Image (cartoon, rainbow over the protein chains, first blue to last red):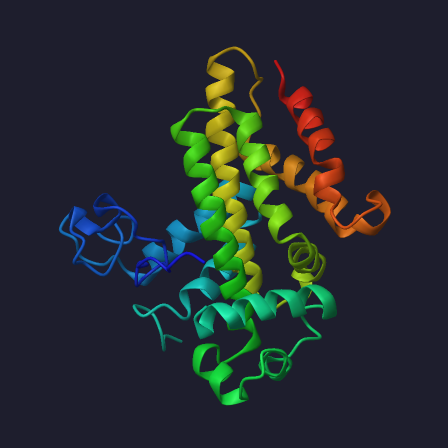
Length: 84
Length: 185
């Protein structure tokens, strides 16, 4: 069984290659999609929107369903845990 | 095999035979003769176990897709890679898609995130075929939903579509050929 690779602390995306990380820096905890040009973590709303869009574009689910699914996925992530 | 892997494998088998909603972490503990506390240490809830099995499925898929993509093997190879991994976990996966609408949001979202990854691979492969003049244009959600709808229908009803244990082994080639004919330009 494959070893679990590191994952983004914000969205859970597997971090397999250096370019997957913020600023291409493998010591950083978040992926390039959850961070801005300076490597800083985006706001919860921005990350939620990006993740929700992923469900809409891939499978055509409604924006409300996509948002609910993205919310469920982010709820346990280290960056967003404990958020109401 | 390390404890975590033993638990994931045992859970996958129990989910397949008893159903996901019908299996408890205590059942998993019993089947591998470990204490409930040991299971709890690795997987506090059943959902954590279901997600671990889905994640394992995702890792296998990613490895298969990477190979098909890097070698530019085409859409047919991507469909075959998808079915190859599904066949490895077929009884579990059939249960998963049968119970999916009733499963907790986190589990369902995890499965649909995996679908998103498959959708991406199919679309990239289709676009390559299209540029080579071998496929027609199809919007990404419908491309994926047409494929997954077909595959899931056979999986959910595998008892009537297969004479043996694997509907993918018996019908997989027919489904791939049919889908390739549908997308042809």
